[in-house]
Amino acid sequence: MITPLDIENKKFSKQVMNGYSVEEVDDFLDDLTLDYSKNYKENTELKAKVDELSKDIEHYKTIETTLQSTLVMAQSTAEDVKKVAQQQAEQIINEAKDTAKQQVNELENQIIIKKKELDDVKKQFDIYKAKMESLLISQLELLKDINKDDD
Image (cartoon, rainbow, N blue to C red; front, side, top):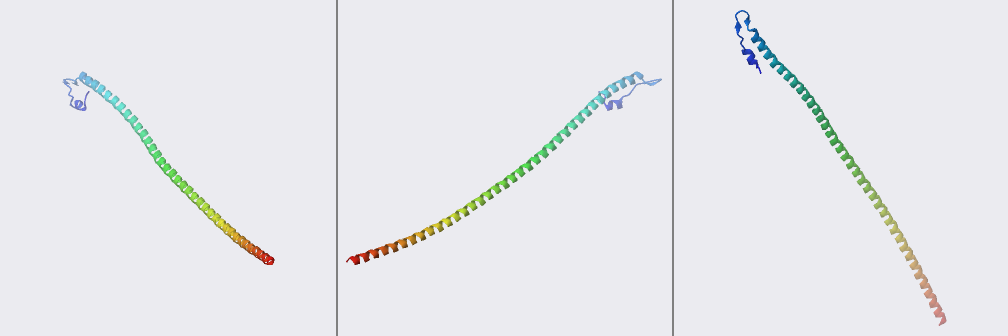
């Protein structure tokens, strides 16, 4: 392959009349044309390959950007889902606490009512007991009076 230095240093032999040898110049130009054609073709192919690889790089950069965006979106969505789940859990806990408080209040009210009912029953029993005691005393006195009359 001819190098730029070969071209620069190339010396043609001179003919007396016409200057350089036409054959030598033609041969050199033929060699130069072949090398230049190879270089031009190789250069064109390499440029095409560079363009293709550049397109591939751009394609992969686009995919990378898309994946990064998707990842950020997925992370954001996961955080949102987590927040919503936490809020729902807190809401469920608060509702359960409220329900438990209501049930405790209802039970306390029922206990108060039952205690009042128990107190009422005790009072009624005390009244009944007093009446029975009074009745028994009066019956005993009647019996005593009957016994006195018989004596």
